[in-house]
Amino acid sequence: MGSFGESLTTALNLIGGADPKLAEIVLLSLQVSLLSVLFAALMGLPLGAALAVGRFPGRQVITVVLNGFMGLPSVVVGLLVYLLLSRAGPLGEYGLLFTPGAMVIAQTVLITPLMAALTRQIVEDAWREYREQLRSLGATTPRAALTLLWDARFSLFVAVLAGFGRAASEVGAVMMVGGNIDGVTRVMTTTIALETSKGDLPLALALGLILVALILAVNAAAHVTRQWALRHYG
Amino acid sequence: MSGANDVFPLVLEAVSFRARDRTIIDRVSLAMDRGVRTVILGPNGAGKSVLMRLMHGLLAPSSGRITWRGRERRPEAQAMVFQRPVVLRTTAHANVAYGLKLAGVPGAERMARAAAALERVGLAHLAGRPAKVFSGGEQQRLALARAWALEPRVLFLDEPTASLDPAAARDVERIIGEIASTGCKIVMTTHNLGQARRLADEVVFLDSGRVTEYTPAGAFFRNPRSVEADAYIKGELL
Image (cartoon, rainbow over all chains, first blue to last red; front, side, top):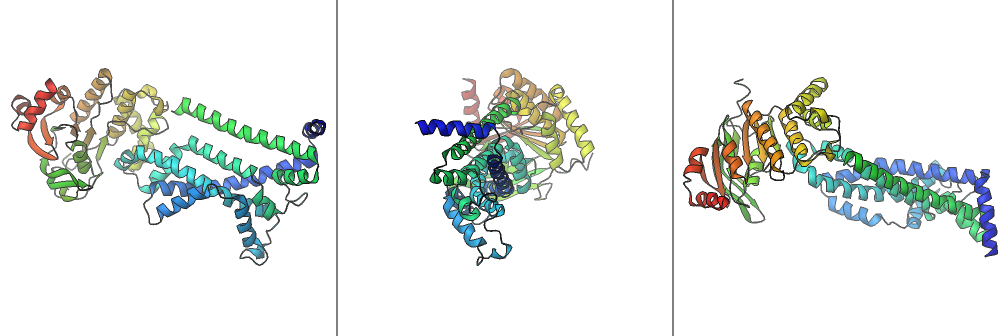
């Protein structure tokens, strides 16, 4: 208990003093996860909307696969991206393995199905309600998909935040493809894992506190957005 | 305006609609002309909404033919208002402008026509407000404005006042009357016989997917020819 108290004090000092090493790790985490969210949203939102509104062969299969992949184990994604990026892999020539770029790719692969599946559910519910009216007004299927994405923007924002939460808190994939290299690819989750196993609890604890605070802040933002949108836009 | 009205007559020839082995519309033949306001009456499950969706083009007949002035192409200058108004999560003005945009109306004209349509339904003061938080009556008036702005030659209305309180229903009836007075053909369903008497020039009576009667409204209410219609009117009055 004494060691926990000491660790906590040191952790809070690290945070309060804006320790440069700590800051670097937090910053890289945010960069990697936010970039992943951006790419995943660019792919996942249109894909989800297309699955909700479109009628094409293979739609059901893709939907089932996406729903299943929402809970994709991050170590499996790590392994897959590792194989793709390793020297002998199909994308090996770009030398991305053990770089932040590899971590962005891994997290994008991890959360794109999650965002696409949530988007599909949200847009499909809206489509059920709007379908006849939009068809009556002469909306083509792509136009209807765009309209529904815009109409469901507040719910989709929550889906995007869910993707960020998953990306920021996963450890397996970034560990495997990033390599947890000090000063290069070390992010919050991998540092926590490493420092804990080394016995350096203050840094791990400081990062853990920041990570939890971040996830809480993201969820609070999601909640506030929904409440605000409901009041102002219905 | 002869060119503007040349989508009529709307002719249905032995139109049937089946869904999962159930016949919902059974060999309906009708010819509807411009000018007159047509009200489709009939008990629940008679197929009124489906018949209107077939005419509007939201559903395709399982068999039979629907033509507009002899052509099978569905005319663009038509609109439909549903029982539960569907409004987009944006301002009232943008909701009306959206319909005009889909109809290919250019930007500046779109803005002006949307504003004018909101004015006509008495929603001008709410033009910049988000439509999803409107009352049911306001949303239905917005749906009417969106339809009216398109300057349709025919407007389909599926029980447009069924979810509204009497005051809001009166507003909607007044607006329907005004739209009709611009020369737009009105085709609507209702369960409210008072409303049917006020708005109908002619009545299509539908029972189990078949048209049992298609007569001028006065004659229909005075002396319905089919047993089904007679029973329906008496039942509604009880």
